Image 1 (tube, rainbow, N blue to C red):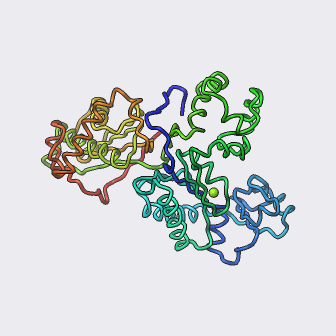
Image 2: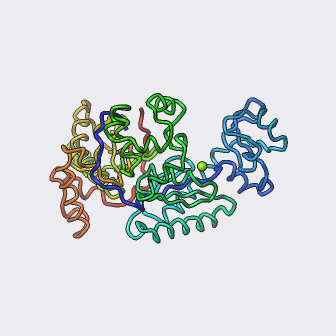
Image 3: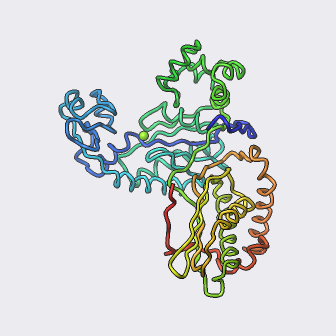
Length: 414
Ligand SMILES: [Mg+2]
């Protein structure tokens, strides 16, 4: 979060809102999973296994020998002569990541991958109770056992992303830890300042200069004190530590888009634009469905002659139909050399997951969002395309609501 963004405090913190899952000693345990001879042994993973290679992960057995992430291979061997140093296999870890993601998705609707071995789930419905949240955690753990019986994970349950992560980190390996709003006081007494994710050496020193020496000191400062000491970040920390959802997560490598090959009767600039707008409204609908917001948009038009027009831009966070259509029109206006259009595509990127509706901070698009939601409701109840933006009339039959398959993909240039 940057200081320019106002805080969204629309939704009060509630227990059992977020589940955080962290795979324990991930790369090392994947290796132990696929090579059973490594199980129970000190294992370290390095991109390069020569003596200057850097350890990027190690098994719990290697940890007991004092081997740390960041050690070089030579010093790891010195600490633990029997250590098995294995060259990292990113493709394998990615494969397991995908399988884990599938397991999580089959258990809960709102899953976000934070990194290759960390995931968050925004709890919904009956999962937002003590019984529900713990049952979900148990189900996930037992389903994970089916795909990887040697691997374990730590789970944290809390009122916001931050506290769920803190809870998850507090008991490794294989823990399930709950942090409740009513226990915050005793919780902060138990942990060290450096146990708080986001507090590094530098920040620890800055806080010490301001006479904050422990997690409990930090937690006990008033909003006024923290704002004075740390300016805007102080204010964010105040709310974050109390369970307000002030963090958002940009979902890397995920885009939401649609594309369409134009039939001969739609190969005019006006009709191509109309199809593109229809695709744009479908994209906005999908963003809303997946509770995502986008910060980037890219479009592409390919011409029959082989040439094309492509543009992309970063804009204010949006997931409403009005904004996306406006952006598409302003981008299309830059296309000077129209020829017979053959193919149109739209993609949104820099996606942000907002389980907490942060709409109040985007007042200018609030009205358009409300209208989009009204249209979604009509279309959900009465079938797709009952209501649509007038401008996409020409295109509305051209791009049927189906999953595009085998369409050309394009890269977004940054
Ligand atoms: Mg991990």
